[in-house]
Length: 223
Image (cartoon, rainbow, N blue to C red; front, side, top):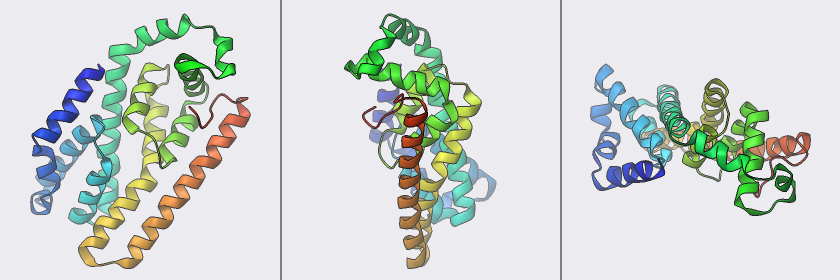
């Protein structure tokens, strides 16, 4: 499962057809076909964990702020749900067996990879929407790893999708604004983008502390 995702990311970099589409505003603006091409390429781009900043920037350049934000969120959501489903299909049973062989009390002692994954798994299963939303809002971390971890956990797809769409929106708007600003020279939009980036990070940190406090340390920054 992991090898397939890694190989897909390498192939997309070595044969940059998707990136060529994203770098072609004229093609993307070509009516409904351009929008469909953007959504398909963006979904594949995000499914394999490639930087979605490039996707959002291209959406801002091609479509402006509002349409670019909506299309970028839809493409991001489609890619994340694909990776979630891939992980659920390919590794959920193996992950459950691996975690069940671990002493659950060890999770509270904070030792080892399995203990950390066990804590995260319990956090996602107990509060799937809040936990995933928190990690989406934080300006650090890997979206692909979160997609895989959520798929390997017992999280339901609807809370995962809702938290992904909502959590991805602030940083999506940031890079769409930068793309639109680069197109029309809007310094004010770039300033707003920087503000949204900082605000989403602070909100993520606040939620991180809140979830960790209510769960007795289930979710902590070192996870």
